[in-house]
Image (tube, rainbow, N blue to C red):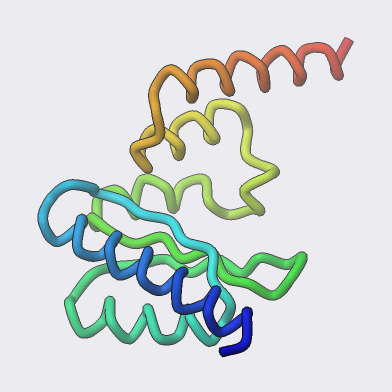
Length: 123
């Protein structure tokens, strides 16, 4: 088996597990970055299970950010996921990370570091 196929299979297992966690109420929002082919397969699965999603192209490499989960969470992130993720403000980045269930302490550290960086670059 070619390494890229094996890698894609591993990524797909992770995404299927994220779908499982959403269906069981463990997570309200998920994000995965996939190649367009894999994204198409995942979108078919999400459609078949009536799970809402937002697709965001990643300009740098042709991949796709696929956000899926609770409709209310998707509506909330739609307010600021209108640009590449590396262009999010520290506040938007913090909110997204928290909504995705990332460790709160790490998110707080990341937020403080990003705020310091923004403050230093404007001085």
